[in-house]
Image (cartoon, rainbow, N blue to C red; front, side, top):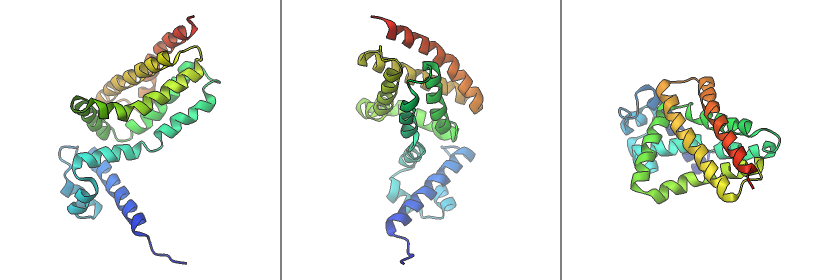
Length: 205
């Protein structure tokens, strides 16, 4: 049996090593002081290889963040099997747990990506919307599954409200350096109010 490592597998392993190195450095030295040369030195690769793979430090950070999000939508989608069995506030709390697990793992990277997302929205609204739309669409589907009285338009509107609340709350969570438990309690406080409004909307004729 051939025990050699394929070029594609080796390339994937190298990318993961670069991701993990960048994630570690951004937490210890910060995004501004983290250079391609410093990443290369710690990952034991050449700076040219990092540029070849990612093009720039900004693209590397973006891909590192997306690398952390690989299973996020799958986890949210998996909530559908319980969406009709639990209260809306409990469902929204589960949203929060999943997103916080990603966003609080590397808070410095999350802060950098939030700054980037604001800039991206200012530069290219269409690309920004294309990136966030799948998340909002999935949340809308789960809200409607839990509250079948919602119209499609209402579910999309409510999902946008949930996403906006999460983003604004996350800024405060990062600023105050909340623990995961404190962050979840903070979000649940806001989400419970939104849940009451969504339930009232779903009951309207």
